[in-house]
Image 1 (cartoon, rainbow over the protein chains, first blue to last red):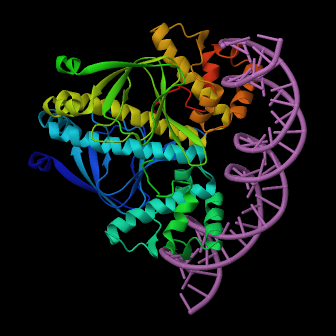
Image 2: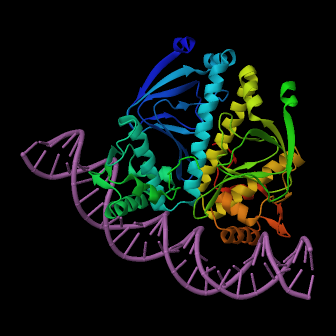
Length: 218
Length: 218
DNA sequence: CGCTATATTGATTGGTGTCAACGGGAGTGG
DNA sequence: CCACTCCCGTTGACACCAATCAATATAGCG
């Protein structure tokens, strides 16, 4: 790990800035230190699908690949810790532990991707929104109040309506409408456009369509 | 690798049989030797989404996890090569190469899952069907005619209409209708219900909505 | 020869997309 | 300080694609 330290360097990006474009040369791998970034794919005609949300500690880039497979965009101010690919790959060979850790993280990402496939393929717009909110709420709960404080969670949405739409496979209008509907039904409260309060977390979980216990892993 | 041989054993399943249920204890990892299996998730109300298609050489199971996260079902006669989880995990620690190979395979699966997210979230029914057909055709081309023979590919669909629907996030009726439409438009030919011929592969690729060069990795 | 599973096709509904108008806040410049 | 603009978000009207409900082939199989 000390060896990793010796080849690392930091890069920062402003909200909205693109970190790399799909198809670009990418001579480094990196991990998010602070802020939020998104992974997305775009079709020729402009249809966009977000395929990953990068939070602090998440890993970007693939050892053994030259080109970026996805667009990486900072949605907030973003700090990343980068390693040049060559030295990193050497370390992977000499330090088995790194490959094992990376495998674990990749398996987690794969599970998350598959969970998202269920959402994209089978959930209604309302369920999609509820699922996204519960995921963000759960994550914030972990950061802000480890071990409880469930009744009355409040947090800020780190994404625009458009980014949510791209994540959920919806249009931004539908996102806006469903958020309004959840608000009207008392499932969530809004202060401004970005600050969300969830008075009854179980009620929100009911709306996600997931199992009663809300397990992310079915 | 010789050590792997010493702890392996084989299991076979009939078409339609379930290999493991989501939530079941799973004390082995395995790789597909012959046949096709599917990974799928089901919601309480029965909505089902397939999250992976397992072809020969594909790996099933997660080191370090007790319970199966998905339903695994054989869609054809299936042979799997299994390793008890305990010994396999020991081998992973002592033989770094295995973890590195597994990492590579997992990263490939992650890419495939993300490609599928774009399909589920943003493609039309017609594009979904065309994408599935082109993927199956491409795979069969690899098996039957490595390095060419593109004009006039013929193959059998290894999935029922319902399985295709679960894979594509559609209903089986829509799958049937879109296949009929592609047939009427001359993009594909059908002999019986399962045998497909593609007279012009580029024409099919146009219908997928992907880039002109048909790259699976954008 | 039914019986069942698989598949096709039709009629209708409904959820989401599309197009469009409008609101509000932040930043900018006169 | 105020107009102006831009970006983000909301809301409405309408259209359309795919889901739903339903009826009818077709094939395999005991």
